[in-house]
Image (cartoon, rainbow, N blue to C red; front, side, top):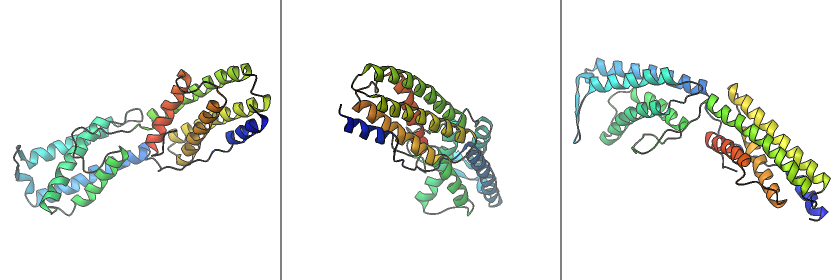
Length: 265
């Protein structure tokens, strides 16, 4: 490989262009949103009770539902979600149960072209925000969709595993680069620096996620650095895709790409 090509690769390693994604809702923000949904639900239910609508019966082609029973299930779905939502557990099943009940009301209102209570739109907006936090369209109409979210502890764990994988890639790459006589010392040094920078950026991302701090810029940098590193390893004919260590990196970048709405490297 000629020196001009190696020099170009060295420059590419240290000049990643990062995209910026949407800022992810932190656990505390989601927790507050669930509390707001609880408050909004109780206000909406009081409106129904005041107009005696809680004694109504809803009849459809599929079934007949007592509004009081529906409200009881709605209330329980909120309580269960509040109790199970933890940093290490995003409670996706519980979120789905709540959103499906909210969607039943939203869809019925849309079909009828009216809203029975002025308090429902505010509650519906909060449910919509919760749906978006779990990468779902609102209202939820399909029975096959699943809520997708990793909470702070879960996502930080993915990034920590990525850090360990980067260390392994560093070791494997050093050995392979030294064995390849066409790769000079300068290029090996630039390659090593880029991998170390990737590890440092991953640590910063993990710290920000754990501390409930904004991290979209840093995640964009991390994904960009990963893309550049993969391209460079390929140009230098060093092993990347398919290797166990690189799969560990990809597992982390996939989770981050999904969480921050960015293209996967």
